[in-house]
Image (cartoon, rainbow over all chains, first blue to last red; front, side):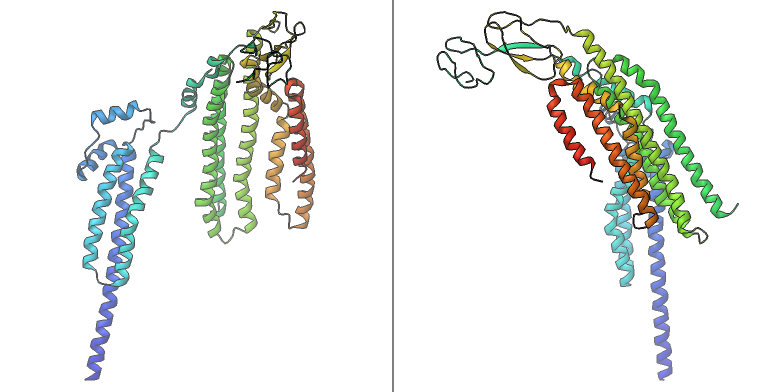
Length: 200
Length: 264
């Protein structure tokens, strides 16, 4: 009798362990897949214009309008051959939202407290992952600055100060009341002749 | 080839590529500097701005050396049992040596370009200003004993009527101090500036806790004081001589800097 109960308990414990392990693997796979997709999103944004269009439609993101593109081009920000960061940000936001929803759904399925904690941690990290990914994207998308571009950028500052050069001049301080001249270099108080303050 | 040799070769190839990129960058920039300097009038702001761009490019090459070592090479060397601590340091120093070499060349280049710009600006100012111009007293119109080549405003008493006239020099002459004189003074001490950087780097590599290395550190410290003093004296003496109006200010600055030079 006792032997049977013990056997059942052992089987239950074994099953629990198996379940825990399955859940852990399921979460690890969920996180690994997320990172693979994130990396693919970045690569498509940076290097593949054709695939980027399908990314936009997959994530139901509106591409930049002609007016938006024109505004960016006129603003003087460095132009890039990759998808514009603002557009990448839209797709990234949608991607992160989907990942958050999927994680939420997975959380409802799981019961093991350790696995749940791991998944909660991942969910909390999503916003900082988004921030770091966007920054890294911006850095990679920036057009490489070459020497001629450096000189072109500096060109508007050529002789800027020279335009405001002023020639030399001589001035003298005279008394406002009597017109007498200032006669000593250390005379900062009053007119020697009539006593009117010289510098008021 | 062993895995260790393969890794060392990989690191060497990477560093060679960085150096090649650095040399290309400076060579390309060197084609542009004379064209820009030729267009200068009385200020060199454009030179500073373009220089910042070039310097940022070099910074990113230097950061790439550090990042590649920290993130890739060092962990890989660390994982190899056959790589001793000393060998690992040797590889690290290869990167640091290149970084230091690039900094030295960059410093030298910056000083030379700034001095070339300074000479051009000085020539323009002298060509466009009448150094024999005579200013008359505002009260009696008698000619005033004014030195046109002046860097500071002055009060001048008229010899004829005693009126105090205030003279404001041409702004182009005044600004020579910032756009030409400092640069020309710095050009005179290029070798000292570069040597000071080198000594700093050599000292960084040594460990003063080890007796044999402490001897070298002490010798380098003595040399550093000598080089610094030579730089300070030469630099400020040039300014004292060429900006006579501000000789006292520069004399004071020189003395303060000389006191600082003793502290290593």
